[in-house]
Image (cartoon, rainbow, N blue to C red; front, top):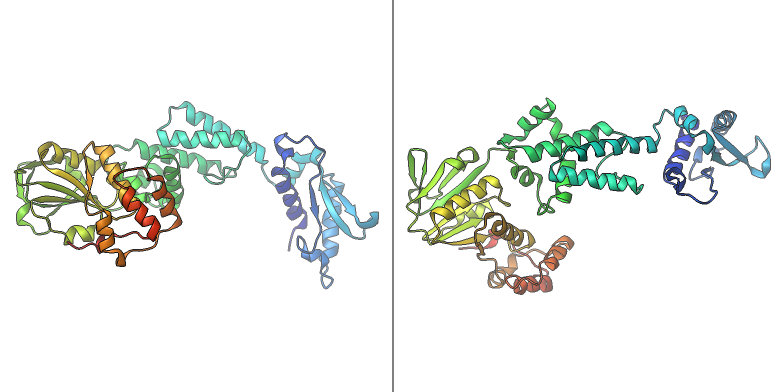
Length: 401
């Protein structure tokens, strides 16, 4: 059966916590009320039930305990309740009655946790999250976007997890990471969404990134991390030499072996082309070229390989081949910035877009905002203007060699 005393007292406390009274900023004499209406409390107006009497009993009991005041219609006590008003002089007793921790107490506990976090020289994303939460709490703003005040243990776990990801220095699978930090292989899965949201919000270049891409940047993978290469080049792994030209679809190299890879016999390589999507990598053939499958955003493992390749093959022209959309343009820009290699875009121009426009897809609102933010770039202005005017973007797989 419904415990109307706890239901209504909790509603009053909810109203109090969302008011300026709870922050001490109120300068007017306001009352925290719960009005008895058919919408707010339909059982009270149901003449076919006895809930009317039960509600009266609960409200009168709370009034006797001085937790609220009953306002009777026409001041006729025991007749019809129009509303009840919270007694803000006995808030501690009200919270104790419903076994609830005051929001201000939970906020104070969180502030202490965040101050301690920032005092420990936190990692960049962890520190940015802690500073944001602390600022919001100081301004009495909501923090529900990231944490629940009712669960400080979860907040502590989130901060610790973000820090652990940023500090990771070895290649791990997601479940290994979870076991190492939580002694349970599945704990991380339950917080993956919140972790991704934090990185998208506070790590530059991650706004549209998938969680797998974010974790890969720190050497954490859902599945084995491979780089695929094919073309006219010889490479060595330790003492072994491999001529890629004899393999039609090239070779996949595990991330654990990337640092051992060295390139030789690169004189015949005129172009190095990084490719965004696996289907295109397998289908594409390009003479006098080395093709490298990146799988979306590059990560530290793939950047290590590209830098080694550039050092061994400086005479080649470097290109990125990806989707003709905001994501593809951002990946190319990110490649240039993080590798220092002068990548140019390959088959990502207006001519290619127009040639395959029948296979295009309409832009989303997010696409439009991202593309608008890229305007002013001479390399992109022409194709972006066309994309916005014709409401079109193109996936790489549509382009034929």
